[in-house]
Image (tube, rainbow, N blue to C red; front, side, top):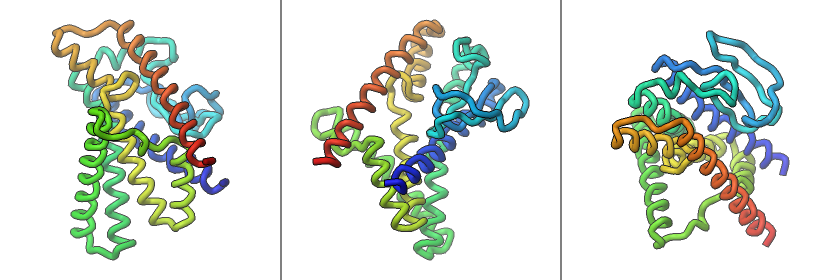
Length: 250
């Protein structure tokens, strides 16, 4: 049990930090200020500021789960730099997290094929690219069939199931854990692009609406959509977690 929890916390946090690194690097490239890059759950108290580079504080939160970047000095303030950036730059910033997750997974798969399978590097690269493409098409296919009613969401795993899988992967050896990390990174990257409020894909959808209307949406609209999306996300997480527990205890 301890192995499962520890493995899940470590892998999930690494994958989320990779995602946030994508947002951070894209924002820096676009000239958008990032005021905090934190490891830990966003709503938990800050423990320490590890260091500061330019305007960005690199911090550690009390609950060491995941991470985030903040585009405002205070959570209640408007992220003026982000909303003042061009639509192209905002789209780049929003999509960079998922792109970083996919690249990270690809590099892990190359390592696995090169070391674990003893493939020459060119073959390891080709096999990794094939694996990444297979996961992308498979995940998109699963989502389409589930939404259309021809499939089921039952295969979707929640935190409890993922923790159990992480524990098994860790017990099976480092290469299995690396493979699991790569798959989780891919899943996070792809699912974050779904056009749902509070996800990066939802922000991209709002940018698309702005492009069609020919004028930016109000900050109030963004805040309302994010609030609704966050509530739906929390509700879905609770439901999936409950379903996980029922499955494991049945």
